[in-house]
Image 1 (cartoon, rainbow, N blue to C red):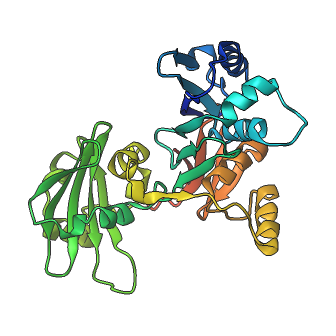
Image 2: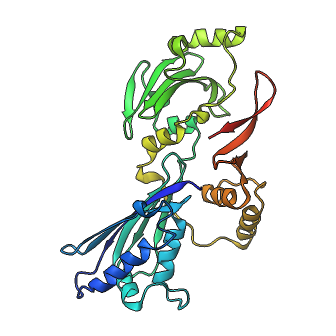
Image 3: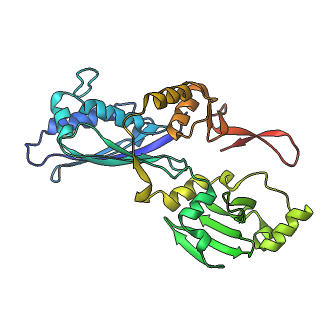
Length: 329
């Protein structure tokens, strides 16, 4: 079973025209029986119509994302005559309405927002552009490297970031904690021509004495071999998606309007990547489509596979044993 995305819409009907309640009921009944909107089963769909305010609120679930839901709505809004599921009265109701909404898959680098003004026959779709950032990028976004040493600060939706220590050689030791847990990570920023490099990482609550080590003790432990070099990066922390979502998921600055048209060359390259999962893609939605179709996809230079029970993993080489192993996400 594919991952389930959560979607929501608020449809404000035109108050200047007579209310066509049967058309409202048709929209609700159609979506309730529509596979695009009910991937999580019937319990994942909910519709509430406020007759006085003329607002239809919808909660629903999509497969991997809610792109197919937006495509269905845009098809009903369009002037094209084929493949319509709503009658003309219901479609007119949608065209004359204002729409706001969005969707997300909690823990995945995917979130969007949709809007439509009255009379417009298409949705404006905005995608969050930073949810797939590396941890050093997220820390730079929230300006964490400039925190005072020893200071903790809450960011976003209840994520506490502490700059435990920083050294004169530009090494930064952070503790990051949220509702899903947290971790300790040491970054080196001494190379001005490269991004901060992770030197040490351990999960909070599992590190024991490791969580109390200073930068000097960590470096000495790595050099002596008393501490093991990184076998995983902080991005491998099981709650990374949730923490990054809570940190920057609500930031308006990172929602970008979807580009309507690609150049001929861009379209050709996109089609090649769509049909060859071994070609690298940075498009998370394309990555999910390829996982669904081929059972594998190379995303941001990591080759991801779908396991027998539907989980996703990549093959890694252990620094301790030199053997390959499956790292599940």
